[in-house]
Image (tube, rainbow, N blue to C red):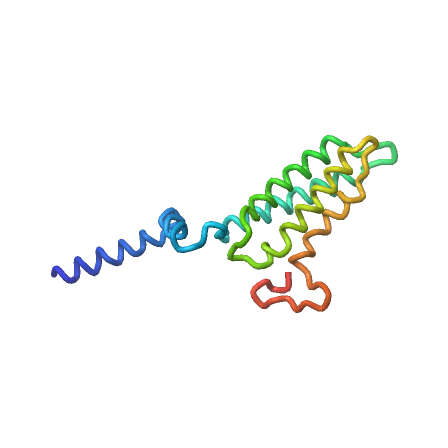
Length: 154
């Protein structure tokens, strides 16, 4: 009887230990300080936010009629939000996602260039237009790269 209770208690303890808050505490001692463990939920959330902002950016950069101009403040706000999201993915030198390690700095540079152009007087949106294509850094085959099976070619 004692063994069954002990085994049951051990299973519950292990299950609770694998819960996200506990796993996060374990990672603080199992990974180096310059390592950023990014959960799948963080990635899904960040990618969803970036996708939403890209749609908003494309709408801002595509005037609805001949007389409509581009809303400079709106473009700057969108790019600023995108920069915050990109920064949240690349907080340290290394992470558990090599593509994020490789391409997040490039995305941030592109967003920063777009912000400089959008804040200029008169504004330039050339770099902002390129940011909307930045998804291809990670989500499309480039220069003969073969998409991984896990990414589903995206």
